Image (cartoon, rainbow, N blue to C red; front, side):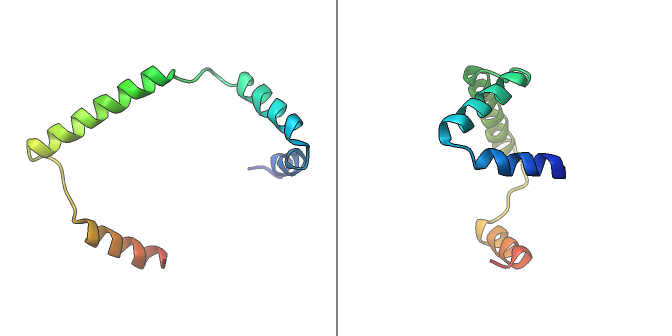
Length: 78
C-alpha cells in the first residue's frame, strides 16, 4: 500500500459510519464486476468434486493433521 493510500485509509476510518459506508459502496462500484454467488458456489462445487476424485483415485498427497499443525507451529511460533 502506498503512503498516499495509507493516509487516505486513516482519514476514511476517522469518518462517521454513514460516510464510510458511502465510500465503500462508491469504491466497490468503481471496480470490475465480480462473479455472482451462484458462480462462486458452482466453482467451489467443482473444486470439491475434483479434490474428492483425487483422493479416491490416489493422486492426492495427504498429510497427517497433527504433523501439519506441528510444522506450522514451529514455523510461525504460535
